[in-house]
Structure formats: C-alpha cells, structure tokens
Image (cartoon, rainbow, N blue to C red; front, side):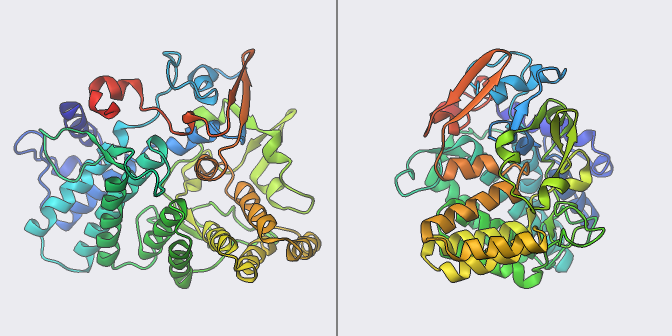
Length: 439
C-alpha cells in the first residue's frame, strides 16, 4: 500500500503538464519545489487529481434510473444496485487512492514551503489552500467510507490519515473522532492563512475564505452542530450572498462556474460514464411542483425520458455555492425551532427559483407549516435544488436513511432503512493492497 500510494503519485505527477518543470526528485519519492510557481503547480496538481466520486454517488440515490441500453451500464450497474461486496469485474471502482494522491501534494507543500519561501500573501494563500484541501479530501473519505459523526459513533472506524511524507507509514484507519479532530485542525490552520476572500472566475476551483467557510458549514451540518453550521454559512454569505434568479432572461445555471452564486467550482459531479448510462428518476422529477423553474432548466426530455443539463462539461463543476448555504441556515434554524429565520432563508431561495405566481403560493403554504413540516420542506428543497451535485447520498445517509429500491437487468434490489450499505465498502483493490483498512 505504501509504495503503491507514493510511487503512484510520482507517476501521476510526471504526466501532469503543470508539474513537469519541477519534478526534480531527490531522493526517489520526494518532489522538490523551490519557487512560488512551483508550489502553486503542486497545489494545482492536487486540485486536478481530485476524484469524481460524487458522480457515482448519484447512482446510489433516488435521483437516477439506469439506462440498460447504454454501453456504460456494465460499468455502473453494480454501483446502482449497491453491490459493493462482489461487483462485476467490469464495474468502475469507487475512488480511494485518488484522494491520497491529492493529499500527497498538499503534504509536500505543508512540509516544505516554510523552508523554501518567506511568508507573504501569496505563500500564505497557497499553504492555506493545502491545509484546506487536505481537510476536504479526508472529509470526503469519511463521508463515503465511515459512519456519520455522532456521540455514539466516535470510537468507530474512521479513515487512514495522511499528514506527512513517510514512505514507511502504515495506513491504519484512525477512529472517527480522531479523523474529525485532524480535519478540524487542518481547516482551522488553513482558514487562518488564506488571504483571498473570493476567487476570480476561472480560478474559482481554488479555496478562498468563502470556500473555507462553506466547507465548515457543510461539515458542521453533517455533524449535527446546527449553530456552528449556520454561523459558518453566514460568514460565507457576508462576502457574497447573491443567488441566480431563474426568472431573469439569460440567467446561467446556478452551478455554472461563472454564476454569481458559485463559491468553488472544483468537482466533476456528472461525468460522461454516468450521464450516458442513466436517466432522471420519476421520484426526482415529480418533486418539482408547477411553477418551479428548475425542472425546465435542470433537465431536458430525450425521447421518453429526461436527462440532466447540470453537468457534462467542466463549466458545471461544483463543490460549494450559495444556494446550499441558504438551505443550511434554513435547516439549522428549523431544527433549533427558529421557524421565522428558517422561513426567511427558504423564502429568499424560492423566490429565485419559482415563477412569481408560484412563489406567492409557496410562501403562503410555507407560512402555515409546523416545525416538523418546515424541516421536511427544507430537506425537500435540498433534494430539488442540489439535484445531481453529489450531495443527495450524504443527505439520505445523515437523516432518515430511507428504504430505496432499484431494478436493473431483471434484478430488483432493496436498500433497507438504516442499511449498512449506507457506509460504502472500501474498494477490493484498496483492501487487497492494504488489509489494515478493515481493522
């Protein structure tokens, strides 16, 4: 496992043009950067290599139906059927090593940048991004391969933590508690170092203070820390609180990297392999009521089925955007019993997503909801707003873990409520290379 991870990273770096000019490896396995541009190149490699796992996560949810006529269906059908234990050999494996390749570059930056460069705004920004990217990669590993955070789960298996360049390191999973301690520590260090409040369009795949606050908001939401999640979301919105108004002529999709609400356009959430082998489910389509402009903007009819318009090219990469922050604040306040505040943020988002007449009806209906009904309304809005952005699986996992049923190639499989498969099994290749993963 050790050699596969690190020598695999060197091989990956050698084919990335952004790294070619500084791959002076002394000794084998150690990249030696020397200038600001070298360290920026390493950071770019970390971003470029980040996996497209969220696209595959959408197959596990109630958002998609498998297209059995697709030539890509053989690679995705066992993902769709939650068959992680003994998938067909043709099945695309969930990303695992790619996370650690991305982390490798951040460790190289963190461990050497202070020795090579004097602190300044640019250097501090790069170092801050490295800490945050390391935190985010570990956080995503936890979301996929570990249980949700709760006081009852702290001693359960988390994920292997990679925080240094060590070719002899054993990658034994830390506890869930220790894993989150490391993620939070990296987030704190990284956020304190950042000097860029908001990245310019075109480089907004990089972390900024806005992105750091958005990440903190999501992490605290998933941990059930409602006040902290809402507070972090407010910090991000204090920098930019704009939403795309779908009523406006020529408005961009909210997850377009040039949209006014985009925070961080990093992750590929709808790759060709998944797009070509799936249709939009009736469950998702039927969740949009009359006057909801998203149904016509997010999806397009093709024959007798619907496909997504939210992906397919890099301009629709997305990790964080403002609509999620509005929904986080609404959810947290609903859970805390602050219904007026929850309604306020829910209403602002809906006004930008519904026609004027439909919005009036929505606002009137929402005003009469009980606390429990309001929370359900916010979670429904997350389903509609964040569709196919890779977050639906996490929302199902952290909330009710409902029963889901998928049928493919004559086989019907049910994911039972609270099914253990809500925690994804490590890929067999990763287990074979590192049996410690099961400890």
